[in-house]
Image 1 (cartoon, rainbow, N blue to C red):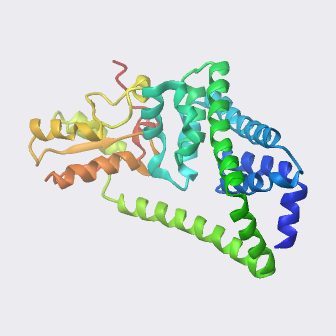
Image 2: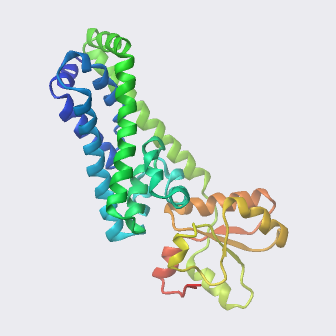
Length: 308
């Protein structure tokens, strides 16, 4: 444990830069505790608060601008891939689009305080054409607020943090083991939340080929598109209704519970579609199925989309 503390003391700025960069690139390695600890060590004189803040903001900007450029080049595919590997798949593309479309680049100011939002929001900003200067301004402001709050907390409670570090140091290898166990518990908890979420969404689905056959038979099912309005600009399945979680009551009012309903999205594991499908089933609908692969599978199969 002493080795780890000496590492933080001697290479604090480099350690912070690497930790923030890796976390903002998407790795589940929390940087906030590191910023709190290095903030608590400011009194030892190895570095200053402005320099610590600058290094943290710089690392965050490099990572976020990388996602911004990826979004600008590859569009929605980057966001889908981010959500596919995320430990918080329930807080990805649709939720991020909703927040970003409503508040614009200003939402980046609080992005780093919202789990699963920062990386996806950066890619989304690039995908929808947010100007680089505006993105950098708001992202830097948000990074400064996020890192600054951690540094401030560390300096405010420096004596308490120092006491905790001294206790861990006195424990030697057992202190290091406690830190490793805490990190392992954090990752395991996130993984279990993801596993439970995806397990809860498993249900019978329909393939794009089966849906195409239903449409050709002349008695089409009710098709619900649960993507955001922004995502729909690229086209939707002919006859599909745009509907969010809050619009379910409108469907209940205008259709019977034995109506066949197909729900689709553009998200990994059909998460948003399955969530809406479950809500409809709770309302009494007995023939509800998410579309396997969503709109991406529909387009890849060569089926037409409605651009209006």
